[in-house]
Length: 468
Image (tube, rainbow, N blue to C red; front, top):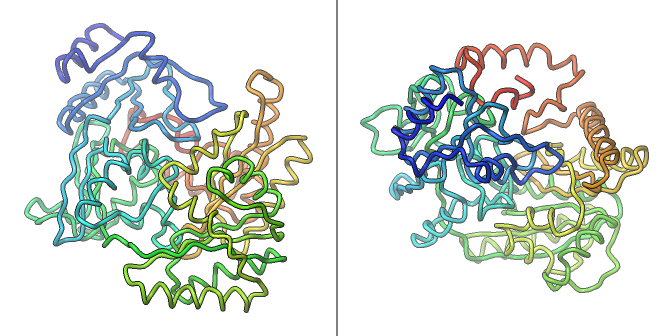
């Protein structure tokens, strides 16, 4: 990068927040993702305000410098791996939190993690009832950029459902506010669908390719203090699938609902079962781990009773082992991330959504892929909204074996294509989801036009959104 540009960057944020040192560049060449080649950026900058981000982007836009927005770096599919010659803009210093208690909303800076937000809101007996599995390090803004799911999604959906509005710096340095806060006279965020089209949704899931999210406004809820943890057993996949559907149909307060196939559950408990205190058990073919929650104890007791009846009407039984869902829920700020790293393998992960009744199709395709490519792996997931189930299958490999890693990459791409044919949809539009999928041509052309309209020089996280 031109030394004159480095000097200008230092003038914007101060010399201590700009680095071209090799050790720093190495740290920012990777993320929590595995099986993605590290790439050293030319420089890393850490702005502390929206105005500084604005000035940095104006400079990058002027010189055509590729920009990689980054917050916590906990993403698992290579979203923040730099490009050659790029500038990483790390946003963790933008960490203010503003509560609008009467509006039941909160605005957070791009560097606020879910752990920081939860600690702040707990003092007011409030919460944003959503926890990605790396909440202690995952920044809210970064999670919005991927439209993540997590603990709490069974009831409240993906993070998009909780967003009121965004502050975004566009590639050319212009700053826009979406939602009700687009009116500078508004008392705070209270409505998402304001001023015409839903521009908020344009940036959710955009993976930082349309602009940099510097602030996020979210709905808050009264904090729940009454919970029930239990496990439910079924011998047929359709019974477990219909159990989840019927819970939703009857408005049961499910905060966490996950189906485990027998051998997958055994593998999972080998990793975390002792820590959670889960007793040895001859598990059925399919187990549902369920957490119910309510702000009212009487409502919770009613939901517990109804869940038992719904289970039995679907041909299942209450197992009664509570340690599994309780351990998962209490460990919710790190459970998904920790269970991914507790074993000794590297892996490629394939986030996607199925309908609950297609839960078994992902399992069938995963087992088929592992048999054909002679690989190890596993999958897990959870209910993630009104009609969806979030999956994250993993294929394992030895990082010292380059041939095996390439086999996993090939299998990963093939699995994506097969899942697409089952009706699955990604919530991270990685290139392997769309290679050779003719049905997506018109859709992707529209995405390309949007990208070009907002970022005609193509500097924002190039290639991350479906190769665009």
